[in-house]
Amino acid sequence: MKTLVAAVAALTVALPAPAAAQPAHPPAAEHGWVTSTLRHMSLEQKVGQLFSTYVYGSDAANPSPADRTANLAAFGVETPAEVVDRFHLGGVVYFAWSHNLDNVRQIATLSNGLQAAALDTGHKGQVPLLISTDQEQGVVQRMPAPSAQFPGSMALGAARSAAAAHLAAEVTGRELSAVGIRQPYAPVADVNVNPANPVIGVRSFGADPGLVADLTAAQVAGFEQGAGVTAVAKHFPGHGDTATDSHTGLPVISHTREQWERIDAPAFRAAIAAGIDSIMTAHIVVPALDPSGDPATLSPTILTGVLRRQFGFQGVIVTDALNMAGVRAKYGDARVPVLALKAGADQLLMPPDLALAYDAVLQAVRDGELTERRIDESVRRILSVKYRQGLSRSPYVDVDAAVASVGSTDHLAAVGQVTDQTLTAVRNDAGLLPLTGADRSVLVTGWNNAAFNPIGRLAEGFTARGSRTTALPATLPSTQAIAAAAAQAARHDLTVVLVNKAWDTAVGDPRASQQQLVAALVATGRPVIAVAVRDPYDIAYLPGATTYLAAYTYTPAAMDTLVRVLHGELSPHGRLPVTIVAATDPATTLYPIGHGLTW
Image (cartoon, rainbow, N blue to C red; front, side, top):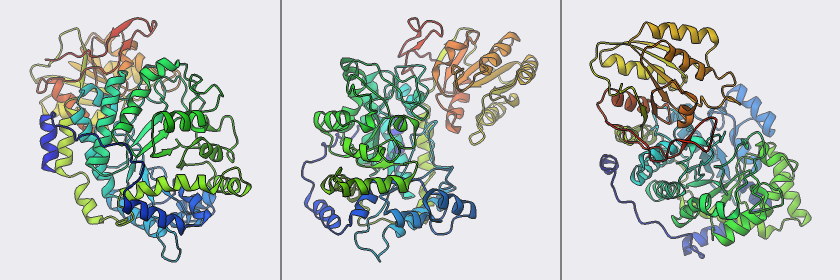
């Protein structure tokens, strides 16, 4: 791992040459294993390989009573192992809310237990699982501490370093692999050209198609060649210009074909050129690609016509979660998995009713709507990924080794050094930064997160440098809380206020409480530093904030970088990877792509 830290320190490390696209004819050993395994599988087992879903419980065979009840309600059996066995599952997706991600030892043990269930020697044709999770880093990360918590995609876009993006993916992939997770749903290849995008935002590398393509390719190489896990570029054909969240509705993308080719397509082409094994679909309608009104997930024109034939992608197409409203808006839950397969998808992710979806696919084969040959095509792709993962030879993980490697000193050093490249100083009109002297009282307030506690981390950083510091979390504050924070600010020499999507008054902050908080703090006449810990667009809605930085995330490392930059111990290196436009006039640019102050 010494080479990893050295690479981050320099941030000029040469990336490995992009791998060739998937070969038309896999190597003989892979072909032999896939063919032999497929030959021994029943139709029921083949259909099961197509599905990947969550299961409730921290232990494969002995979940808690509450998780037994939840599994029984969702799947008709009580334990995660029984879910895998009943449906011959091809994959399992881990979440904290399904109690799969408590700590490193538990995760690795759960993975081994689920693999044992999948490989029950009492059945022929059994296949190891492909275990997955959403580990984009930044605001979307599932692994608990002490795992390496890198900044997310837009922060990496601000760093503008393919080496840093590669390294973040490699370290992340190694830690996931150590606990048995071989398919991170990352990187995000969407180009966030809509500042009001409710679902992508900082999950994207930025608004520049070339930058997004370069960093997508770098992360594919980091995950696949560096860490040996299966990268998943998402969300095809591009979710970066939506005004609707596909979790709750069906977005329509108005890009022309020329705009789509220029904005959305390059990152996916780059991922394929880098040898990516898997691409995730989007539940979005793109009339320029398919005028039928069907979401891309269910569109043969988009998945088979564009992604397979035009782009030449031969890897696994995984759907976005089938329990999302965007894919359920037009068809019933029994039709969606069948239509996704007919469109060209291979891996069916998280149907709302697994039994209904599984039976629907089986029935479609028996009725002749789907051929078994078509099922075999998808199963072959999935088996090929599992073979290349080494799962056919070594499906289990070393639990003690996982505990030793996840959150190791080298990994955490890499996190810090990558994060140091990302912070963007957007506005310093009052010349307040860098701070000089240490004899001051500081109020740290604004948005907070219980798990990461950025308010507390930042306050600790000021205290360690000699300030008399007060931490006052004020997440979406009430009128009374705003008044209390302003009263505190009036008694301090300096206030640092964290904001998180303060622009989003439609859903996230309907009372505009964060905007009101910043205005009240500024009105005290005391110096105020505003820091966006998610979308950098917030400055357009905080006209009184004359000192403003974009951290893009609220991880501990990001707060450590922030306090060092504020004190002049580190120069801010990040440059905006998006354009910030005026709140009332999108045609007016406040801060262009590439803007960033330093000192």
